[in-house]
Each structure stands twice: as structure tokens, then as C-alpha cells.
Image (cartoon, rainbow, N blue to C red; front, side, top):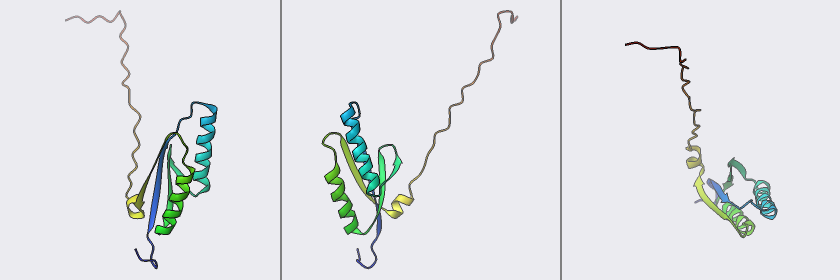
Length: 112
């Protein structure tokens, strides 16, 4: 990677932290606020992404992330290029259509 033309990359952070107790929710909120203050934005629940320019910036933000990881729970990250990120698809499910059954009254008798 040339230092004159650094590549843009993305850091995706996936996390699953316990939130049952009040103290756990505080830890979750503290971690989430760290991500937001460090330039990440929410892609979907518990998935945050940040754009970085060059390897040095990636290393800097990964070091910050490692220092902020809570003691309990699971935090993962994935490095991808900007081109890979832009190829991401977006799927939304359609609401299920429930067929309404026509009510049949007891007085409707079918004769064969």
C-alpha cells in the first residue's frame, strides 16, 4: 500500500453484550457511546461501522477499540475495503399475507 495513495477501508464492529442487570446496561451504553464518539455509526442493532483512510488510521482505531472492550460479552471486528462495503446488499422482508377465510354460516348447506 503506497503512503501517497492510501486506501479507504471500513472497520465493522459486531457485539453482543449482556444487558440484564442495571450495571450491565451501563457498560453496554458506555461501549456504544465510545463507538459513536470514535466515529462509528450504527449499521443495524449491535453492528457499527467506521471508515478509515490508510493502515495507520486502522491500527489507531483498532487499538482504541481493544482498550474499550467490556470484560464480559463478545466483540468482533472485520476489516473490508471500501469497494467491498459498497457491494453490500440490502434485503427487507415483505409482510406475510394472511388469506382471510370466508366465513361459512351453518345455514349454508351444500347439496350434491
